[in-house]
Every structure is written in C-alpha cells, then in structure tokens.
Amino acid sequence: MSRQPMTTPADELSAAAEKLRPSSPAVAAHTEWVKIRPAAAEALAELLDDLADGDDEGEINPWALAVARALNGGPR
Picture 1 (tube, one colour):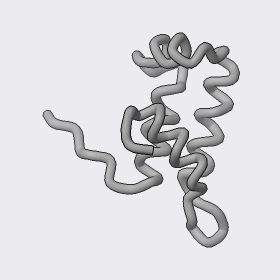
Picture 2 (cartoon, helix red, strand yellow):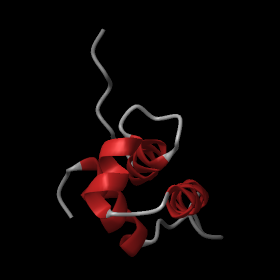
Picture 3 (cartoon, helix red, strand yellow):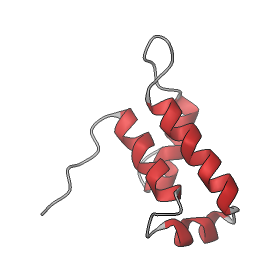
C-alpha cells in the first residue's frame, strides 16, 4: 500500500503534527533531533493541528508551513 503524497499545506501541517505526538513511532527520533521536551513537542503538535485549519479566511500561516516542511523533510 503506497502513501498518498501530501497535497495541501494543511496536509503538511497535520503530518508534521503527527510526527511530534508521543504515539508516533518517529517521535523519539524527532525529539532527539531537535532536542525538544515531550511536553513541548505535544504543544507544538497541537499548534500545528490548529493552524492546519487556517485563519478566519482559511489562509495557512507561512511560518507554520515552514516548520511543518522542515519536520517533514520537504522544501521550506
């Protein structure tokens, strides 16, 4: 089964948030990589999930997208 590519900024934010969650198999590697405490990783994941919905006009914050892309290993 192949994974669908991330096609929207919201998909990228959600994927990055999942990588930060304690239930994610990759969380240990990511928290070690960025030297972030688990509580901070969860807070950042919550923020990215919230920002995936966009603002009142549906626009995605470009800084949040840059963070998500860095966590996802994609272009910033």
